[in-house]
Amino acid sequence: MSHTERSSIAITHYQDHHFNGVDSLWQEAFPNDPPHNRAEIAIPAKLAVQPELFLVAEDAGNVVGTVMAGYDGHRGWLYSVAVRLSHRGTGVASEMISAAEIRLAALGCTKVNLQVRAENEAVAHFYARLGYESEPRISMGKRLNPAA
Ligand SMILES: CC(C)(COP(=O)(O)OP(=O)(O)OC[C@H]1O[C@@H](n2cnc3c(N)ncnc32)[C@H](O)[C@@H]1OP(=O)(O)O)[C@@H](O)C(=O)NCCC(=O)NCCS
Image (cartoon, rainbow, N blue to C red; front, side):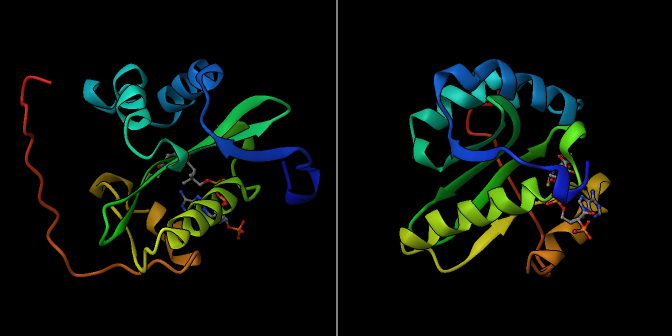
C-alpha cells in the first residue's frame, strides 16, 4: 500500500474495544516477546498509568498500529511501536510517533528515549529518519518481581 492509497487512518487513544486488535497486532509484530509483554498484562498496567499516552492507529475501525508512551517527569519513553504488515511503509508509525511526541511535549517533556533490541537493529534506520539518534549507553534493567 502506498502513501497515496492510505485514506482513513485515525490516531486515537486506546479504548477497551481495541483489545483484540492490539493483541493480534502485537502477536504479529512481536512474535518472540516474553509473556510479561502480552496484551492481557501490559494493557491493564498501562491503563493504570497515563492511559492517554497509549495510542492506537485505526483504519476503518481496525487496529493497524500502536505506540505506548510514558513521561516520568524527566524523560519520555516510547514502547510497543508496531504496525500491521498490511499497512507498513505507508507512514502510520511516523504519524503515531509524531502524535505521541506532541502529547509528551505538552506534558513538559524535553527528550524522548526508546530502546531497540539488538536483533532488531535495522529498525534504527526508521527511527533515525524521525530524528532519533543512537546514543552511547549501556541499557540495563532489573525485574522487581521476577515471578511476574
Ligand atoms: C518499525 C515499524 C513500526 C515501522 O512502521 P511503518 O508504519 O512501516 O513505518 P513508516 O511507514 O512510518 O516508515 C517511515 C520510513 O521508515 C522506513 N522503515 C520502516 N520500517 C523500517 C525498518 N524495519 N527498517 C528500515 N527502514 C524502515 C520506511 O521504509 C519509511 O521510509 P520511506 O518514507 O522512505 O518509505 C514496523 O516496521 C513494525 O511494526 N515492525 C515490527 C515491530 C518493531 O520492530 N517495532 C519497533 C520496535 S523498537
